Image (tube, rainbow, N blue to C red):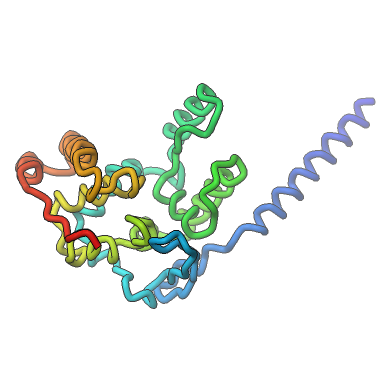
Length: 249
């Protein structure tokens, strides 16, 4: 009897290992992302919601190398989206625990726990459907990305493909769309505004909901001050500086 149970357990473990192996092999390879001249093409949506191609890499005329992006923007996005970015290996366990607790309490996928790396994996390879399967794929691909790419490369890829508005993808387009300037020229106030927009460009639309955006922006600036990401003088200057948006396009 014990021998039969043991054989059944071994068979189940073998089947699970086989399924996991096939599942992993079905996921896309990420090694090619190490190459700066990669020509990967992903599908995004234009301002009218129609599918269009978006080139990942320097062949995209809007692509901006990380060293050409304002440090203010980089720091603001990390503070807003993933303040443990430089400490984790793809996913933040504390955030994940909190998200699971919230989802269980509300009996639905109510809270995300996606790190910048997980968001990159989703934008590159996956859909935005809220399912457990997609979340598992997202977490595993994030783990792979962290083991293959440097943190700087992950940031560069993320900032250049994420959506910043209706049909506006990548920091190159976003900086031009909202401020008519290059990403290297963004000041702290402009950078935090873009960071606020990022999670939900429609909900935080500065052309239609500036009061909402400014409230969140002030919260982010205060948080950056408390975490010593900025100095008191920088904080005071940003609070006092008005934002001049480019005319609505």
